[in-house]
Image (cartoon, rainbow, N blue to C red; front, side, top):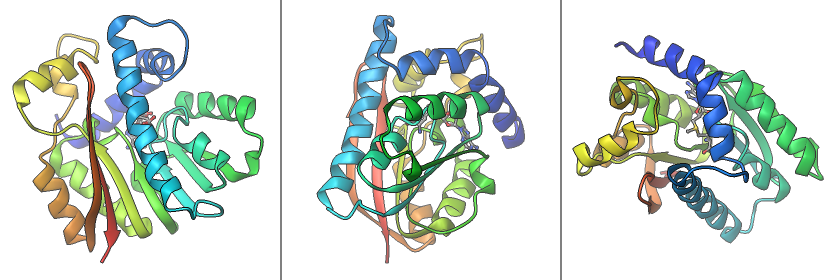
Length: 228
Ligand code: SAM
């Protein structure tokens, strides 16, 4: 399968069955045990990013690009905390859901702009660029190009999460169970941390903070890298 196919499949998935599934996982309604585990794991990743950014104590007015924002799980609290957030996602349905959630909860909606956009077509310049749990949908070569593009948008900092390629078969099997269809596992890609760090360094960034969230069904390595 080539990368263009990956993108088409991902977009269609998050506009159909994937939308229904992930909208529930990223919500607070009733879900099954596996989905609850993934919800809790994902929330830990989101909370870690919020902790890092709030600890820096400069969120007010900070420009942030949330690439592959999903339903706004991170963008909404960042905007609430005063950041100016540009949130985009390849899936129209995810963005629509994000807009609706923001309109129900956000007291300062002017801080958050949503757009339907493939992250590789993003332009502009942001203090911080964030991309959480998106690279899992792409093979390393494609992920490299995406990371490089995201780096080109970041004035100061990039924050990425990915499923690390450790104990590959076990994890791949588990991650595979997140995806429907007979070839489940082929749609989730693991990335070697060394490869991600290498591409960040090639683009002039150095890892400063890192974290790992590991639950039964959710694995996410989080890296914050700053411009040298
Ligand atoms: N980052 C969000 C979060 O952590 O709550 C959502 C994570 S969800 C697992 C992956 C998201 O990436 C989906 O909403 C999907 O539509 C989006 N996505 C996948 N490929 C993308 C691309 N090329 N450009 C923009 N968004 C993309």
